[in-house]
Length: 289
Length: 289
Image (cartoon, rainbow over all chains, first blue to last red; front, top):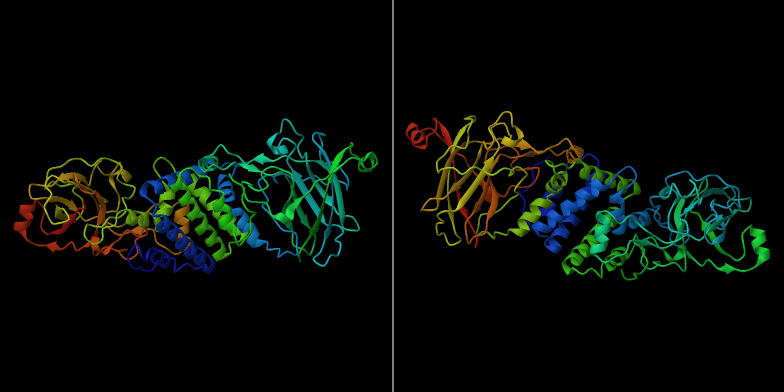
């Protein structure tokens, strides 16, 4: 690297940023320059002590060493600091015209099975039955036939199929649907339960030390795509779930919360193929171009 | 945690900071609030993409997983971003009155052997001989007899003893001295060489991607302490070493650079117990209260 001025407290960020002056990738140079500026501002703002710095080094090291093939503790840290949600939001600005996005989460790890419209994704029949209906349209309201609607959710105890391989059938509460000629979709499921993110590692200790709970409010995941449109990855949140106002990963946007009203009508239940009474929800998805 | 407002791009940091409102330890709350604000500002400033975020998660994970009992890659990352030096400087403000501090580094891992004043710490006799003299005084210039002067350094090939257990005697180029009745110290050694920090891990890849070299300029470590005074951990840098203006860890302060003049004088060499010619350096250490 090029020579730099000697380090001083006042000019620390400028001195370090100058060391990146020869970075060939200008985007990388810009990111590192900004990172150094904000990181040094943080250290100066709080006047971080040597012991606190050492504790931070230990925390980051343990976070890295908690990661395995099936657990990503650094994503969890990013989640509980709101960084994941911020990146998601910045990269998918909906501007009020399109369906808003939220975090994908760590459970979209097996392919959802293709299913016929109207199918029941609750293969084990456990939980409060629910009919989910909706539509997929473009920004001007035009229906999009043949759109892919990929859904996955936790069960009535707050677990995904992959978390309970001995209890739930694999691909339980997952389905890949295709909208009909009018851009509509519908399927049967159950009301999901809220659940905690993994809290037995360093991130869990951070939550505990800050009197934060680890729970996410109940939700159904959607990933909706169609040729020529921007894919949206989002959730549908259940309006009466606990933790709607304190999601551990800050995933809730008000446009994504829906009532799931109870229906007590044997004729409608028979039509839907569900026991009476049952609950319903409707979700109109608008894709951007 | 308490309920919080829902997440928006504009108010992301406020929303996340509010989740820490119930943290019992007010210092921890203050640190996390500042961290979240600066971290979100960084993400917004550069409009971090989803792919860049994923690359950062991968980099941090690998940094954690590179750490072992004898290697601390997160400290190395802190070093090359100037954070270690900033924390050191903030916590040891000398204000021009006392000897300035710099990073301790990772090689102060074995106790230095107590030695008599004037002893030669170069046990294997390799390298360019050098006589090191100096004094330890208090802030008003009063000599401090009986002060501890702990020194350690790399050899003429840039390696510490612990890095070359089959080549150097253990405790080569280390010594623990005690100042005499007038607060003076002196010992014999050799001129150290510059050396690279470990560059075969993720931090090394970061340096390479940014066209930065991994080298530190040649230096002798000092840790000087006396009862009733603040301990100072610092280096003495060799004025004619390469990399003085581009230390990979930003450890150089101009007050710590010294000429190591060459002496060609058989009488002085005999007096010092060194071959002729030899080099010399003088370091007056001033401790704060």
